[in-house]
Length: 295
Ligand code: PDD
Image (cartoon, rainbow, N blue to C red; front, top):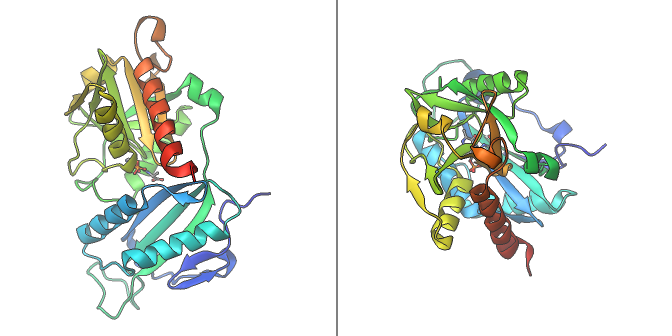
């Protein structure tokens, strides 16, 4: 059977088999969820937008006041080595940094002598089967019960975990998070809406993760002259949308065709992926193939 995690993994300066990688049970990632992470897609053994992912990693570390254990070039070396060692051409690289393990449990930061735990591994990129993409997926809406710094990519993901589980239990692929009547994002994705040919994107605030895929989509919209409005989207607008999509590094662009059991869209496109999303998916593939798969 193909393993989910490739050997070796990276842990605190060493490359070693997953089975030999161990950390203290007092690690603050384990005790408090006190850490950060990144997920970087890899196509044809090239890391997509690695600079942007490492920049967001730094922004999140700054946001939780944790010094980056590695300079950018050293992170790149780790990522490139993991990619080269893994058996797949298309991969997903996971990076995690926690505030390390003290010799006691105390909410406040440990002394400076405690070093962060840095962990990274490669797994195969799990892509959406063509027939699922062609049909679109079902989603539910749930209240956004997360904290007020959702712009930070932190490992304390309990509210996201519970929201996603609720979706799975209802046979759905994603949970859309609504806060005070406004659409923020998905449990593990950004959400876009199309109304009357205009692409609507919620703005980057502290209540949404600034997605790397989100940025690519905004760039592609600008480049191709797709009408775009970056502004808050109300629950009413969401429910009246012509199209709804989820985006992430691993899902790319995926149409949500059923929301809370109701078909998304109108007329002949009701309950089916719409034309703006299909066009954006094609632009995304073309862009990816141009920058990643050639040469
Ligand atoms: N999740 N919003 C949330 C809450 C996310 O967890 C993610 C990604 C995104 C999309 O960001 P990006 O386009 O940079 O992947 C938005 C990753 C894939 C995860 O948690 O596995």
